[in-house]
Length: 92
Image 1 (cartoon, rainbow, N blue to C red):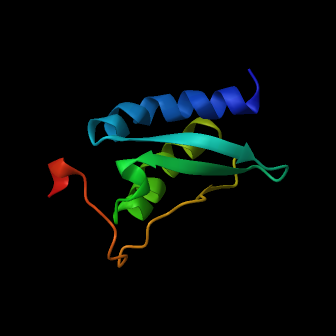
Image 2 (tube, rainbow, N blue to C red):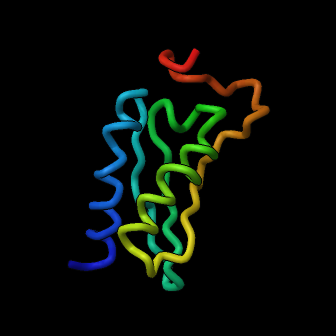
């Protein structure tokens, strides 16, 4: 199984939790130095808690399943202080 498929499989373990809040994630690229770049989708893309979701959930799931991954980055993180940020309905 190639690196991309292993990362996708790791993401599949956390997707139900993201989808429960109206979000998801897609892989934009895996760099030659094993950095996964993701795009946060749906409510994850506008949530002020997205940095916590990325670090405590997504990154941990990927690194546990694919230890050769060096880092996980989101290309569209919402800043916690962004006035346009919106919490998912369940978290309000």
